[in-house]
Each structure stands twice: as structure tokens, then as C-alpha cells.
Length: 308
Image (tube, rainbow, N blue to C red; front, side, top):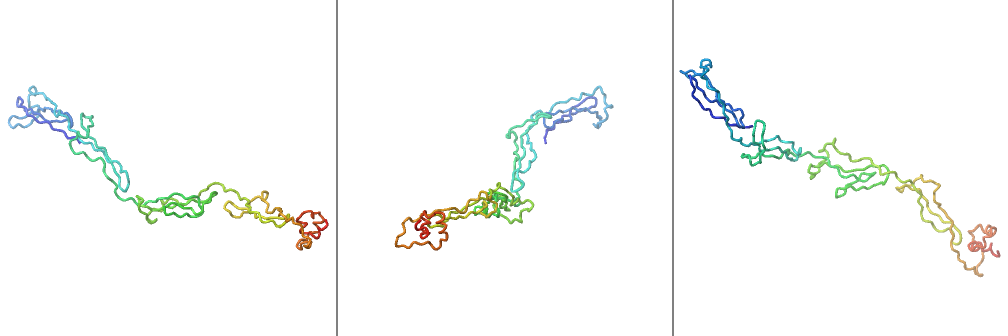
């Protein structure tokens, strides 16, 4: 709003019973204005205004005009509308434009420094929406891929008790109902169930390796002297260590192999009785296939091999 100044009214005496007077008529209230001199026809006896045809038109003085309020208009504050608050709750700030403006024409104005306006400067920002925000869901980090629900450690991070390294599974996370400043935890019922983030999602870390044959250590040789056999375990296991039947038989490692134990080469004393070991039933075959030249068979089938 611009406040102008009304020009003074100055009475003038006219001729032929006429009275002329200045009448203020400010065309522009905030910059240079104009005053016009209005001429009217008045009665001489009671000075009342009558129609102009009662006066001599030749004696009518001209209607003059002059400028007024030529001094510069004083600056004033321009105040814009408040902008939207920076936060919807928990206290934000809103701002507005405040300028020092001076009118210098009907459609022209200039912006001055704040010191140009002498009145108190209006505020440009103020607090807003100071009410507390409602509780909100806060989701912790996802766990590793898991087949079980993980439990948070003391530091709030996730500890996964079962972490398959491949194949399909699920990832879990903890979702809490917290205050907007995260300083307090509320019961889940105080947060909207509709906006709750998911606590479990499907995941996959790629295809699992196929089952494979796993062998144990070789056992002792079955013979105390000479040739014998030794055994070991051969299992088909999955990548998790579980028994499987999907290993190809074509690449199955052997579970038995031939072995040979070192025999004692000390000749049999003449005082010792030369006899076949009772538990050995193949001594005739040893003689037939000419194995008596071997120390082990000669010791086990001493009587049969004697003289051969």
C-alpha cells in the first residue's frame, strides 16, 4: 500500500460574481501528482453554486493546473507471501521475501538497501510445524542369505546363524518402530502396519556346486608280511556335507587297493618246526603257481614249500 500526500486547496477571487477555487485532484498518490483549478458559477447574494449559464462565459477564467508532491516518495517495505514450511513436523522453518522498495513512477520502482527503509524491518523467516512427528519404521541392514531368522547382536547389527553360500534362500532384517529422532523405540502397534517395510525377501547367490566324492585315509594293510589289501571310505557328499546319491559312478575313487608289508627275512631256525600256518588254506595253490620263491608265502606255507 502506498500512502500519498493531498495537495493544499487555495481559494481565488473571480470576476462577474464568480468565485474560482483550487480543488485538489491527486492523480498519483505515491509519486508526483497534479492539482487542477476548478471554476464554478456562484450567486452573489448567498454564494451558492448555480449552473454555468447564469454567468458570463466571456468572463470565465481558465481552469489551470499545477504539479504537487514533487518530493520523492518515502521507501516502504515489500512483504511477500510465506513459502512452504521446510518440515511437516518436528519443527521446520518458513521464509518470505522482504524488500525495501521506493516508487519512482506510475509503473516503476527501485529496490534499496535495507537501511533505506526507516521503519522496523519485518521478519524474513520463522519456525513452523513444531508439533511432534508420529513414530516411523526404521529398517536395519539386510543379513546375509539365510535359511534361519537371524538375531541382532548387542551392537544392533545382524548375525546370521546359517549362511548357505549358494542357491536360493532368504535375507532377513530387523524393522523397528522408532521416534522421528530415532532416540526411542515404540511397540510395533504404534506404527502403521500398511507402511511397514518387508522383513524377509528371497535371494540367490548363484548355482551351488554339484556333489563330489570324498575319500578317507587308507587303512592298515591286511597282510603282516607280503601282499595284502587295504581299505578306505568313499562317500558322495553335497556342498553342505550331506550324503548324496548324485555323484557320477564313472569317477568314483577306489575304496580298496593292494598293499605289501615288509616280511622278516630271517631264515627259520632248524630248531623251529616247519609247518603251514593253520589259518592259511591256499598253500597247495602257492605250490602250484610257484609262489614259494616269495618270502611271505614261503613263511606262511613252510611245510608245503619245503624242498621247493
